[in-house]
Amino acid sequence: MSRRKVASAAGSTKPLSLVIVEDHELLADSLALALNSAGIPASTVNARDEEEILIRIRRAEPEIVLLDLDLGEAVGSALPLIAPIRALGAEVIMMTGVTDRLQLAECVDAGAIGLMSKTSAFDDLVRDVVAVASGTGILGLGARTALLEELADHHGRTQARLEQFRLLTVRECEVLQKVIEGKNAQQIADDAYLSIATVRSHIKSILHKLDVSSQLAAVALAARAGWSPPQHPQR
Image 1: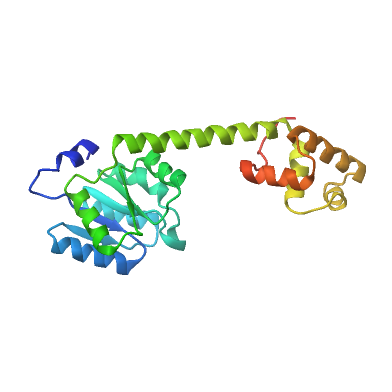
Image 2: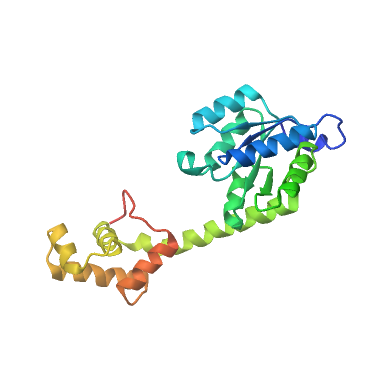
Protein backbone atom coordinates (compact mmCIF):
# COMPACT_ATOMS: atom_id res chain seq x y z
CA MET A 1 0.00 0.00 0.00
CA SER A 2 1.28 3.43 -0.89
CA ARG A 3 1.30 6.72 0.98
CA ARG A 4 -1.08 7.95 -1.71
CA LYS A 5 -3.59 5.24 -0.79
CA VAL A 6 -3.43 6.27 2.86
CA ALA A 7 -4.02 9.89 1.92
CA SER A 8 -6.87 8.98 -0.43
CA ALA A 9 -8.71 7.26 2.42
CA ALA A 10 -9.59 10.70 3.80
CA GLY A 11 -13.21 10.93 2.48
CA SER A 12 -13.68 7.17 2.28
CA THR A 13 -16.48 5.58 4.31
CA LYS A 14 -14.28 2.58 5.09
CA PRO A 15 -11.45 3.23 7.58
CA LEU A 16 -8.07 1.60 7.11
CA SER A 17 -7.29 -1.47 9.21
CA LEU A 18 -4.52 -1.26 11.81
CA VAL A 19 -2.23 -3.54 13.74
CA ILE A 20 -0.71 -2.14 16.94
CA VAL A 21 2.79 -3.40 17.76
CA GLU A 22 3.47 -2.34 21.34
CA ASP A 23 5.27 -4.10 24.21
CA HIS A 24 3.01 -2.51 26.84
CA GLU A 25 0.04 -4.85 26.48
CA LEU A 26 -2.36 -2.76 28.57
CA LEU A 27 -1.87 0.28 26.35
CA ALA A 28 -2.10 -1.79 23.16
CA ASP A 29 -5.24 -3.63 24.26
CA SER A 30 -6.92 -0.46 25.54
CA LEU A 31 -6.14 1.37 22.33
CA ALA A 32 -7.39 -1.51 20.17
CA LEU A 33 -10.62 -1.71 22.21
CA ALA A 34 -11.23 2.02 21.87
CA LEU A 35 -10.56 1.93 18.13
CA ASN A 36 -12.82 -1.04 17.50
CA SER A 37 -15.56 0.69 19.49
CA ALA A 38 -15.10 3.65 17.17
CA GLY A 39 -15.48 1.42 14.11
CA ILE A 40 -11.77 1.20 13.32
CA PRO A 41 -10.59 -2.40 12.66
CA ALA A 42 -7.64 -2.80 15.03
CA SER A 43 -5.71 -5.72 16.50
CA THR A 44 -2.53 -6.05 18.55
CA VAL A 45 0.77 -7.87 18.27
CA ASN A 46 2.69 -8.51 21.48
CA ALA A 47 5.26 -10.96 20.08
CA ARG A 48 8.68 -11.18 21.71
CA ASP A 49 10.93 -11.33 18.64
CA GLU A 50 11.14 -9.69 15.23
CA GLU A 51 10.36 -12.82 13.23
CA GLU A 52 7.14 -13.51 15.12
CA ILE A 53 6.08 -9.86 14.80
CA LEU A 54 6.45 -10.02 11.02
CA ILE A 55 4.65 -13.39 10.80
CA ARG A 56 1.67 -12.04 12.71
CA ILE A 57 1.55 -8.84 10.66
CA ARG A 58 1.62 -10.91 7.47
CA ARG A 59 -1.32 -12.95 8.73
CA ALA A 60 -3.33 -9.89 9.73
CA GLU A 61 -2.74 -8.08 6.41
CA PRO A 62 -3.26 -4.58 7.86
CA GLU A 63 -3.06 -1.44 5.80
CA ILE A 64 -1.31 0.46 8.62
CA VAL A 65 0.98 -0.74 11.40
CA LEU A 66 1.17 1.45 14.48
CA LEU A 67 4.71 0.62 15.64
CA ASP A 68 6.23 1.44 19.02
CA LEU A 69 9.83 2.55 18.55
CA ASP A 70 11.05 0.88 21.75
CA LEU A 71 9.80 -2.69 22.02
CA GLY A 72 11.55 -3.46 25.29
CA GLU A 73 14.46 -5.73 26.14
CA ALA A 74 13.30 -8.68 24.03
CA VAL A 75 13.31 -6.77 20.71
CA GLY A 76 14.84 -3.36 21.40
CA SER A 77 14.55 -0.67 18.74
CA ALA A 78 11.83 -1.26 16.16
CA LEU A 79 13.70 0.80 13.55
CA PRO A 80 14.90 -2.31 11.63
CA LEU A 81 11.30 -3.52 11.39
CA ILE A 82 10.06 -0.57 9.33
CA ALA A 83 11.40 -1.74 5.96
CA PRO A 84 10.22 -5.39 6.24
CA ILE A 85 6.78 -4.25 7.43
CA ARG A 86 6.47 -2.00 4.40
CA ALA A 87 7.60 -4.91 2.22
CA LEU A 88 4.54 -6.79 3.53
CA GLY A 89 2.32 -4.06 2.04
CA ALA A 90 1.57 -1.97 5.15
CA GLU A 91 2.51 1.60 5.90
CA VAL A 92 4.15 2.39 9.25
CA ILE A 93 3.18 5.06 11.78
CA MET A 94 5.63 5.30 14.67
CA MET A 95 4.11 5.58 18.15
CA THR A 96 6.76 6.71 20.62
CA GLY A 97 7.54 8.76 23.69
CA VAL A 98 10.84 9.82 22.09
CA THR A 99 11.15 13.54 21.42
CA ASP A 100 14.70 13.59 20.04
CA ARG A 101 14.34 14.88 16.48
CA LEU A 102 17.26 12.85 15.14
CA GLN A 103 15.67 9.60 16.32
CA LEU A 104 12.37 10.65 14.80
CA ALA A 105 14.17 11.57 11.58
CA GLU A 106 15.73 8.09 11.47
CA CYS A 107 12.22 6.62 11.59
CA VAL A 108 11.13 8.79 8.67
CA ASP A 109 14.32 7.99 6.77
CA ALA A 110 13.62 4.27 7.27
CA GLY A 111 10.18 4.69 5.71
CA ALA A 112 7.68 5.68 8.42
CA ILE A 113 4.99 7.99 7.04
CA GLY A 114 3.82 9.36 10.38
CA LEU A 115 4.87 10.05 13.97
CA MET A 116 2.61 9.82 17.00
CA SER A 117 3.43 10.76 20.60
CA LYS A 118 2.75 8.25 23.39
CA THR A 119 2.97 11.11 25.88
CA SER A 120 -0.43 12.39 24.75
CA ALA A 121 -3.48 11.82 26.90
CA PHE A 122 -5.19 8.54 25.99
CA ASP A 123 -8.24 10.23 24.44
CA ASP A 124 -5.94 12.40 22.32
CA LEU A 125 -3.98 9.33 21.23
CA VAL A 126 -7.20 7.60 20.18
CA ARG A 127 -8.26 10.71 18.26
CA ASP A 128 -4.89 10.80 16.45
CA VAL A 129 -5.09 7.12 15.52
CA VAL A 130 -8.64 7.60 14.21
CA ALA A 131 -7.28 10.42 12.04
CA VAL A 132 -4.60 8.06 10.70
CA ALA A 133 -7.18 5.35 9.95
CA SER A 134 -9.21 7.98 8.10
CA GLY A 135 -6.17 8.90 6.01
CA THR A 136 -5.53 12.36 7.47
CA GLY A 137 -2.82 11.72 10.05
CA ILE A 138 0.28 11.22 7.91
CA LEU A 139 3.35 13.42 8.19
CA GLY A 140 3.27 16.47 5.94
CA LEU A 141 5.90 17.02 3.26
CA GLY A 142 7.33 20.09 5.02
CA ALA A 143 7.78 18.34 8.36
CA ARG A 144 9.22 15.26 6.65
CA THR A 145 11.71 17.33 4.65
CA ALA A 146 12.81 19.29 7.74
CA LEU A 147 13.50 16.09 9.71
CA LEU A 148 15.47 14.51 6.87
CA GLU A 149 17.52 17.68 6.39
CA GLU A 150 18.39 17.71 10.10
CA LEU A 151 19.45 14.06 9.89
CA ALA A 152 21.63 14.71 6.83
CA ASP A 153 23.25 17.67 8.58
CA HIS A 154 23.94 15.53 11.65
CA HIS A 155 25.58 12.83 9.55
CA GLY A 156 27.68 15.44 7.80
CA ARG A 157 28.93 16.92 11.07
CA THR A 158 29.66 13.45 12.44
CA GLN A 159 31.76 12.59 9.39
CA ALA A 160 33.64 15.87 9.75
CA ARG A 161 34.49 15.06 13.39
CA LEU A 162 35.73 11.62 12.39
CA GLU A 163 38.11 12.99 9.76
CA GLN A 164 40.78 13.71 12.39
CA PHE A 165 40.70 10.11 13.58
CA ARG A 166 41.52 8.87 10.08
CA LEU A 167 44.98 10.38 10.56
CA LEU A 168 45.79 7.81 13.24
CA THR A 169 47.91 4.77 12.46
CA VAL A 170 46.95 1.21 13.34
CA ARG A 171 49.05 1.31 16.52
CA GLU A 172 47.76 4.75 17.50
CA CYS A 173 44.16 3.51 17.16
CA GLU A 174 45.01 0.59 19.45
CA VAL A 175 46.64 2.87 21.99
CA LEU A 176 43.75 5.35 21.93
CA GLN A 177 41.29 2.53 22.54
CA LYS A 178 43.31 1.44 25.58
CA VAL A 179 43.28 5.04 26.84
CA ILE A 180 39.49 5.13 26.42
CA GLU A 181 39.31 1.91 28.47
CA GLY A 182 41.06 3.75 31.30
CA LYS A 183 44.51 2.18 31.06
CA ASN A 184 47.64 4.20 31.78
CA ALA A 185 50.83 4.23 29.72
CA GLN A 186 52.48 1.46 31.72
CA GLN A 187 49.47 -0.85 31.42
CA ILE A 188 49.25 -0.18 27.68
CA ALA A 189 52.96 -0.93 27.32
CA ASP A 190 52.59 -4.21 29.21
CA ASP A 191 49.56 -5.27 27.17
CA ALA A 192 51.18 -4.48 23.81
CA TYR A 193 54.72 -5.59 24.74
CA LEU A 194 56.05 -2.10 24.03
CA SER A 195 58.37 0.16 25.94
CA ILE A 196 56.68 2.87 27.94
CA ALA A 197 58.66 5.44 25.94
CA THR A 198 57.12 4.09 22.74
CA VAL A 199 53.61 4.25 24.21
CA ARG A 200 54.16 7.81 25.39
CA SER A 201 55.36 8.70 21.90
CA HIS A 202 52.18 7.25 20.42
CA ILE A 203 50.04 9.18 22.90
CA LYS A 204 51.85 12.41 22.05
CA SER A 205 51.23 11.78 18.34
CA ILE A 206 47.55 11.04 18.99
CA LEU A 207 47.09 14.31 20.90
CA HIS A 208 48.82 16.23 18.12
CA LYS A 209 46.75 14.69 15.34
CA LEU A 210 43.49 15.21 17.22
CA ASP A 211 44.52 18.75 18.17
CA VAL A 212 43.84 18.25 21.89
CA SER A 213 46.03 18.92 24.91
CA SER A 214 45.27 15.92 27.14
CA GLN A 215 44.28 12.28 27.10
CA LEU A 216 40.99 13.22 28.78
CA ALA A 217 40.22 15.64 25.95
CA ALA A 218 41.04 12.92 23.40
CA VAL A 219 38.63 10.53 25.12
CA ALA A 220 35.90 13.19 25.19
CA LEU A 221 36.44 13.98 21.50
CA ALA A 222 36.20 10.28 20.60
CA ALA A 223 32.93 10.01 22.55
CA ARG A 224 31.42 13.07 20.85
CA ALA A 225 32.43 11.81 17.42
CA GLY A 226 31.19 8.29 18.06
CA TRP A 227 34.63 6.94 17.19
CA SER A 228 35.57 3.29 17.47
CA PRO A 229 38.74 1.56 16.21
CA PRO A 230 38.35 0.68 12.52
CA GLN A 231 38.78 -2.95 11.56
CA HIS A 232 41.31 -2.08 8.89
CA PRO A 233 42.73 1.38 9.78
CA GLN A 234 45.23 3.06 7.55
CA ARG A 235 48.90 3.06 8.51
